[in-house]
Image (tube, rainbow, N blue to C red; front, side, top):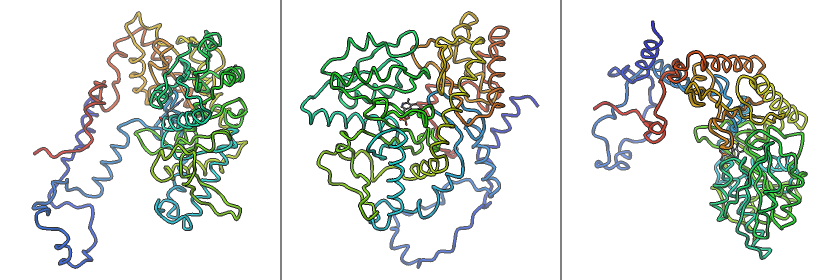
Length: 493
Ligand SMILES: *Cc1c(COP(=O)(O)O)cnc(C)c1O
């Protein structure tokens, strides 16, 4: 059978044509309320006249349907996922199990605090651990994502500066920052001032000096930056920003390059956000629940969003709502608790020494890939990298091959594509992050695939331009795919 035919068979099995009248996979329990009262509860006019047009299938049909669906898209349980900046690492299933323990996942956010002491203590301890890992004094676990943490951090900075009587207007952001940084600064009401990178891919200090004045509220630094490079002059930068009365914000979404090695607080940062759904064992993607805690130095602690988990002398915990200087609420209740449970379990599992190994493995894996691929592709910033690196696909332009084509062809090898066309400062960028959880074998398989693709770009560019060939659907109209999502099966008639 030809490849296209195989895929067609798969597609046909997926649709709901398996339905057959009166076939059943479930048996609902007997009605245990008096029919009379049900009828009182459901007035005639809102009752359904006919049964809903649901497919009628057996349990086996349903299980097969969802199992097939689960592997149509690529995911990290299926294969390598080197999506730069996203840390698509493998997260132990054990932590999922812990987050599902009934004593934790059955809690209701409106329960009285006396009845959720264990959960509050877990949050308190998680906060202390994160502060310890990052060298900070106080923390909020509430923000639901990294970008949400950025906004929360900037609102705290704004409140502190207003208290000091200096309403400043500008936030400085290097061109190697993550894209959410300027967006968050704008939403917080600041004007964004961009500073360029020098040829080494680090902040250009001369350019920075020129934009520093008494209107600077903060500098936001992504560490490591989006080129995967550690800013070696952080202490000088911090000194310069603090000298004009500004604060230092670190985008710590990619802490898997630093944990157990250096602490942001020790390098001069005043505010840092974490991405629990990248670094700390919560899976992400598809808009699932995340958590972007924000840690701060002492002077910013009064501005933390409410409620704050506080531990009293006798060891019991409370949720403090009444705080004079708080920026207010940023999230319903106290945040995404299940994500916190996974992060707490991960931290207890690894300990400080374990985190150092996490970072070392992330860095070694990235450098291994970078050195093995540097002669096949262009590597604009060739120094030692951190957890990720950025190649350029521009040398295949003569064959009419773009980075997009390389990314599409990779799908045929069972690998998710790297981040492409970002960061903007590298033309035809391929941003690759292997993460600490990949084996040497999977890294080598990736290198072989990349080398084969580079050879094809020279010898048979059409294969790349028409890729992917082995996925369930061929090349998509990506705008339509994003704007015109079909998320629900609808019966034909
Ligand atoms: C992922 C990421 C963010 C944004 O995090 P979200 O949870 O997606 O909002 C911010 N900065 C960096 C460096 C990131 O990698």
